[in-house]
Image (cartoon, protein in one colour):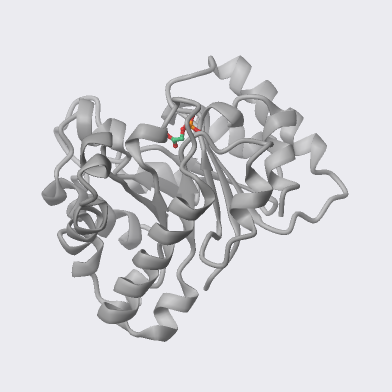
Length: 251
Ligand code: PGA
């Protein structure tokens, strides 16, 4: 079901106490308000259970930023999809470029993670996006298509229709350089067109596709006004309740 979504990605920021304070402040700022979008906050693993207990999860959904590519067992330091689900979280960010680049996530591991997330009732926000080098060579469409072909395009139509996609050009993440509205719209339209070719027009029209990469209170309204941009995955600007609330209000 196509929804507008504003999702925060806290990355590796905030102690538990700081995270609880941020989540509580955001929760209070949304009291008595019905946002025109689904609101999600992606916290570190150790925050999930406490944050989920401290907020109205009917209004603010909680996301993990990763899960293990295994079900359970002797995998020291890993956190499974079932564990994440048991905290009260309902989403998981998967395939973020930082995990692909710094932690060696491949299409193969991501296929397993997406499957485990769906099997455990978590909604994946599946990230894709190209480097500056690829953008400069003007091969970004092929690159992103390949990322999707190797991973979520292998899913059944039924499973595919349960996830959301975030397009995050690596050159725009945390840099303050946002993709222009036209660049973001063009890519999201392209992604929707290849979903239509693969799964049909209905599923394409019902898939939520987000833009991420230096999205903030100033540029959100223009980005979200585009026909194929269904919201944002927000890093830096999700770390202050007022900034994040202003992005929610952009819808
Ligand atoms: P940013 O991060 O908003 O700080 O650019 C976005 C992301 O990586 O999800």
